[in-house]
Image (cartoon, rainbow, N blue to C red; front, top):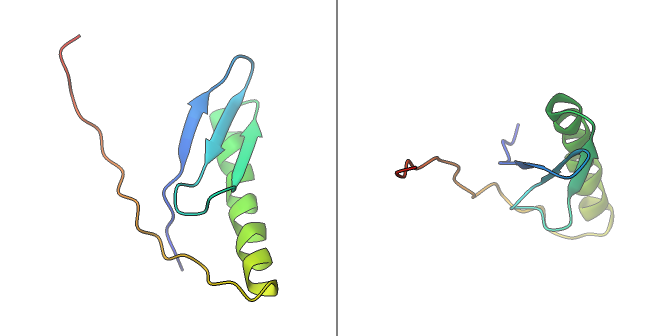
Length: 71
């Protein structure tokens, strides 16, 4: 089991997600939950495609954290 970081951003009329460790792996959805479900599937398909093409599957390496700044 691998654990990849995802970034979910609010767009004009939906949400979009990408995976920093898997360039080109993206998904969109109407809600955060839908976007997360779709990006999980996108990760699965992306990794399957890499393997089918004989390419290495990147190990998760991104670190996710929050920082506080004055408002």
